[in-house]
Length: 252
Image 1 (spheres, rainbow, N blue to C red):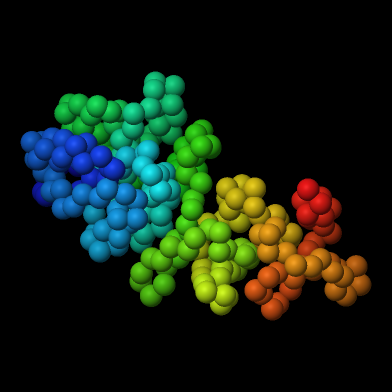
Image 2 (cartoon, rainbow, N blue to C red):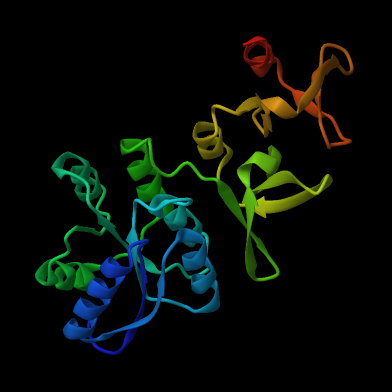
């Protein structure tokens, strides 16, 4: 990436780190630091307001870590290039190299910054999933982003009741002040099942539900089983393939 003024956002919870990075970027030239953010939510709000070319993103931040921020950024219509900054040791950094994710090891050196900016590439969902798999302590989302009328809203995961496949998308059902809401997301059910395995259970190839929201498992017609979920009027079908796992999870 060379030539022209490309727009950059610097995200780090340490003000000194942001200042140092901004100064180095200014020295390199060709980039314009249009804003700085001290946390993940602030970064996401800025990315919705302005189309950015690259985000220098710290991984270890309180509240929402950099991996979760990156997951939301990947959902933007035109996502920016993402370059992680990290204080990880050599073993952990190896995961970034294997999956070709841009990274800068702290303390960031000017020469390394120049090289990574030149080679900056957009971070895809697959690479992000691979990175999270290599570092399971990172990236468990506390919120799920939903696009509504051109704007991204963030739904706390603890309010989600169910995920149901809907053609190319997944329909997410969640509660807001006791009222059931829904929105379309493009995360595959398989990915959601793996990420939220502790709290959700697959009941059908098309449905994933929160264990704590299940009020009743009952027989529908014939041998068909169904579940009734707190806050949802319509029951969801349980396939024979998944009924034994569901009952086991409920017993545990």
